[in-house]
Image (cartoon, rainbow, N blue to C red; front, side, top):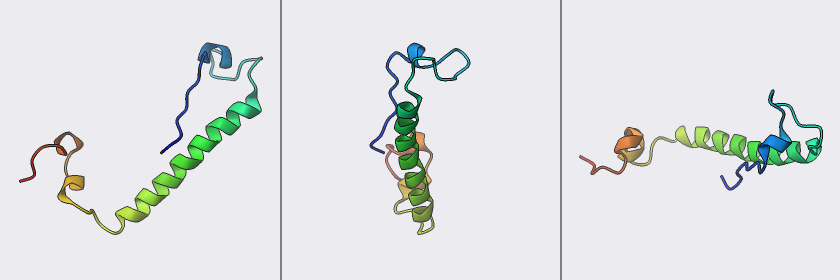
Length: 72
């Protein structure tokens, strides 16, 4: 994914309960979050579809901690 969520001065954007602060530009933040989530959903659907074609190598079937270890 190319999009990331960065929230500079998060303490000024959000209240303690997680709601937007009084001075936050809610529409702008929702648009920003939406773009990232849209990419994440697209990638998850693409990954699920690709998984239906099988795993390309043994490495994908291994535990993530072992993926850089020599294949046996």
